[in-house]
Length: 289
Image (cartoon, rainbow, N blue to C red):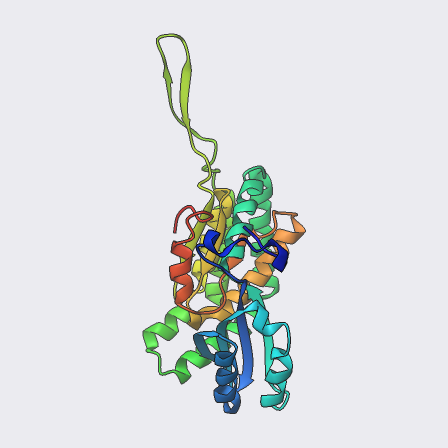
């Protein structure tokens, strides 16, 4: 049950557990303030998740924080201990992502295959239009990977160039041209009483996809899920976050322009491995990972 006032609190003997709203917090800060910010988060009952170094000077901290701990004075204290340099953003945790995807999947099942194909064609054209934006984001990911002494093979998988961008476009167009796998009659049997029973393909619902340093996988997975009328939750590796975010923003523009269901494609952006565990255990909302 939801309790929004003390008067609605049940008797102690009727309570098996109490859950409070938790938010996924992202804090961008110069490196010299990391220690003080981590101490503040610990005092606010925060659970540390991950740190991503965006450059030699800046880092992004990821925490799960109780909502009650941040609505009063957290922001003021954060600004005070970081001399005003740290910035703070938060979103409700992955459960909300699952709920949104579940709702989007129901709406997506009613969208025509023509509209979905046209959306993918538009996305393909946007990839070319915003190519420079994608490559700038990718260069940031690549430079950070080099800074972290990643192998040449790893950096090569991560890196995009003009040829790979053009290939992304081609793949989107190829998927758009494919015949929809939904509503296909696989088998029909006629019973002795004359009743015909058919086996027909339907969408799965919500698909979770976990991938690492290949940014093209985002485009491939999102396109295939859309084509099969499935909502998707995509979990990129932390090394490719900036590139995937750029591609996601461009896809979101195409989805919005074609009036596709909101949240039919979502990404998990924290880079935390904990999100993998949460995603695979969200069985009420995610049908397959």
